[in-house]
Length: 84
Image 1 (cartoon, rainbow, N blue to C red):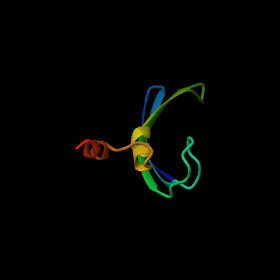
Image 2: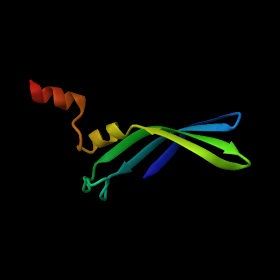
Image 3: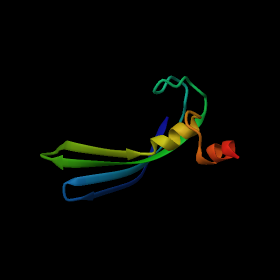
Image 4: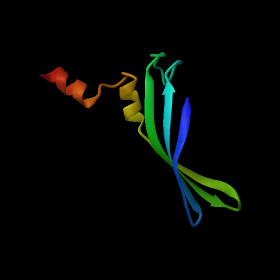
């Protein structure tokens, strides 16, 4: 597993980071047995800082895209092809 920091921006009491996760699915994840597939997922995390401490955190990441890469959910092209 590797997480790359793509951008870091701070304004006022909020710090935002944009990141990219890369890894290989080698163990059970949310009930899905290891597939050995490699995945890439992008996300953003925001932190509100007060008194030198993180007081709130908000996350947003592409969990759907990751599950599609793992084969747990069909990708749109795969789903459309199944109907044809």
